[in-house]
Length: 125
Image 1 (tube, one colour):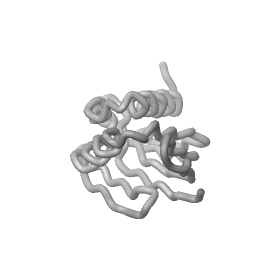
Image 2: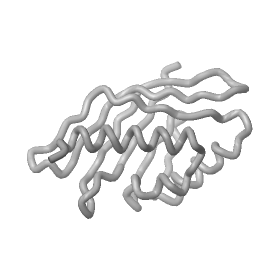
Image 3: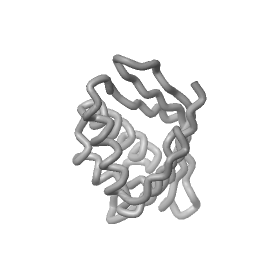
Image 4: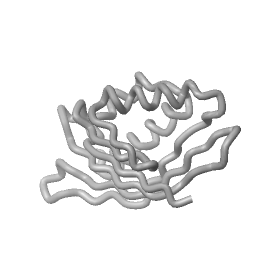
Protein backbone atom coordinates (compact mmCIF):
# COMPACT_ATOMS: atom_id res chain seq x y z
CA UNK A 1 0.00 0.00 0.00
CA UNK A 2 1.27 3.46 -0.92
CA UNK A 3 1.96 5.76 2.01
CA UNK A 4 -0.09 8.99 1.91
CA UNK A 5 3.10 11.07 1.93
CA UNK A 6 4.35 9.21 -1.15
CA UNK A 7 1.00 9.59 -2.92
CA UNK A 8 0.96 13.34 -2.26
CA UNK A 9 4.59 13.74 -3.38
CA UNK A 10 3.79 11.83 -6.59
CA UNK A 11 0.76 14.02 -7.28
CA UNK A 12 2.88 17.14 -6.74
CA UNK A 13 5.41 15.86 -9.28
CA UNK A 14 2.58 15.29 -11.75
CA UNK A 15 1.32 18.85 -11.29
CA UNK A 16 4.84 20.11 -12.00
CA UNK A 17 4.88 18.12 -15.27
CA UNK A 18 1.45 19.40 -16.32
CA UNK A 19 2.48 22.99 -15.60
CA UNK A 20 5.66 22.55 -17.64
CA UNK A 21 3.49 21.11 -20.44
CA UNK A 22 1.20 24.17 -20.12
CA UNK A 23 -1.86 21.95 -19.78
CA UNK A 24 -4.22 23.80 -17.43
CA UNK A 25 -7.25 21.57 -18.05
CA UNK A 26 -5.42 18.46 -16.86
CA UNK A 27 -4.75 20.14 -13.49
CA UNK A 28 -8.46 20.00 -12.58
CA UNK A 29 -8.37 16.52 -10.93
CA UNK A 30 -5.68 17.77 -8.54
CA UNK A 31 -7.86 20.61 -7.22
CA UNK A 32 -10.77 20.60 -4.81
CA UNK A 33 -13.63 22.46 -6.56
CA UNK A 34 -13.53 25.05 -3.74
CA UNK A 35 -9.72 25.38 -3.67
CA UNK A 36 -8.32 28.64 -2.30
CA UNK A 37 -4.94 29.95 -3.49
CA UNK A 38 -3.02 32.98 -2.30
CA UNK A 39 -0.54 33.63 -5.10
CA UNK A 40 2.99 34.92 -4.62
CA UNK A 41 1.87 38.48 -5.36
CA UNK A 42 -0.82 38.26 -2.65
CA UNK A 43 -3.75 37.91 -5.02
CA UNK A 44 -6.56 35.56 -4.01
CA UNK A 45 -7.97 32.86 -6.29
CA UNK A 46 -11.23 31.25 -5.20
CA UNK A 47 -12.32 27.95 -6.69
CA UNK A 48 -10.89 25.61 -9.27
CA UNK A 49 -12.23 27.68 -12.19
CA UNK A 50 -10.29 30.77 -11.03
CA UNK A 51 -7.11 28.76 -10.49
CA UNK A 52 -7.35 27.05 -13.88
CA UNK A 53 -8.06 30.38 -15.61
CA UNK A 54 -4.99 31.92 -13.93
CA UNK A 55 -2.82 29.04 -15.11
CA UNK A 56 -4.24 29.25 -18.65
CA UNK A 57 -3.49 32.98 -18.71
CA UNK A 58 0.10 32.46 -17.65
CA UNK A 59 0.55 29.54 -20.05
CA UNK A 60 -0.49 31.87 -22.89
CA UNK A 61 2.34 34.28 -22.05
CA UNK A 62 5.13 33.72 -24.61
CA UNK A 63 7.92 33.88 -22.01
CA UNK A 64 6.38 31.56 -19.42
CA UNK A 65 8.39 28.37 -18.84
CA UNK A 66 7.18 26.69 -15.64
CA UNK A 67 6.45 26.73 -11.96
CA UNK A 68 8.21 24.00 -10.03
CA UNK A 69 7.23 23.11 -6.49
CA UNK A 70 9.82 21.13 -4.51
CA UNK A 71 8.33 19.35 -1.53
CA UNK A 72 10.39 19.56 1.67
CA UNK A 73 7.94 18.11 4.19
CA UNK A 74 4.52 16.44 4.34
CA UNK A 75 2.67 16.08 7.66
CA UNK A 76 -0.57 14.08 8.11
CA UNK A 77 -3.41 14.38 10.58
CA UNK A 78 -4.10 11.41 12.88
CA UNK A 79 -6.88 10.06 10.63
CA UNK A 80 -4.72 10.21 7.50
CA UNK A 81 -7.33 12.28 5.64
CA UNK A 82 -5.62 15.71 5.56
CA UNK A 83 -2.04 16.73 5.02
CA UNK A 84 0.15 19.82 5.04
CA UNK A 85 2.83 20.02 2.38
CA UNK A 86 5.62 22.57 2.77
CA UNK A 87 8.31 23.39 0.26
CA UNK A 88 10.00 25.82 -2.10
CA UNK A 89 8.72 27.04 -5.45
CA UNK A 90 10.41 28.57 -8.49
CA UNK A 91 8.77 30.39 -11.39
CA UNK A 92 10.68 30.63 -14.67
CA UNK A 93 10.27 32.86 -17.72
CA UNK A 94 12.51 33.36 -20.74
CA UNK A 95 11.98 37.12 -20.71
CA UNK A 96 11.87 37.95 -16.98
CA UNK A 97 13.82 37.22 -13.82
CA UNK A 98 13.18 33.97 -12.00
CA UNK A 99 10.91 34.22 -8.95
CA UNK A 100 11.03 31.91 -5.95
CA UNK A 101 9.86 31.45 -2.41
CA UNK A 102 8.14 29.10 -0.01
CA UNK A 103 4.71 27.49 -0.14
CA UNK A 104 2.29 25.59 2.04
CA UNK A 105 -0.44 23.38 0.60
CA UNK A 106 -3.35 21.67 2.33
CA UNK A 107 -4.31 18.33 0.78
CA UNK A 108 -7.41 16.29 1.57
CA UNK A 109 -8.46 12.82 0.60
CA UNK A 110 -11.60 12.96 -1.56
CA UNK A 111 -13.13 9.98 -3.34
CA UNK A 112 -9.97 7.96 -2.81
CA UNK A 113 -7.59 10.59 -4.22
CA UNK A 114 -5.56 13.43 -2.71
CA UNK A 115 -6.62 16.91 -3.89
CA UNK A 116 -5.33 20.38 -3.08
CA UNK A 117 -7.69 22.27 -0.79
CA UNK A 118 -5.54 25.39 -0.15
CA UNK A 119 -2.21 26.81 -1.24
CA UNK A 120 -0.24 29.84 -0.06
CA UNK A 121 2.79 31.02 -2.02
CA UNK A 122 5.20 33.61 -0.63
CA UNK A 123 7.56 35.29 -3.08
CA UNK A 124 10.95 35.82 -1.43
CA UNK A 125 13.21 36.41 -4.44
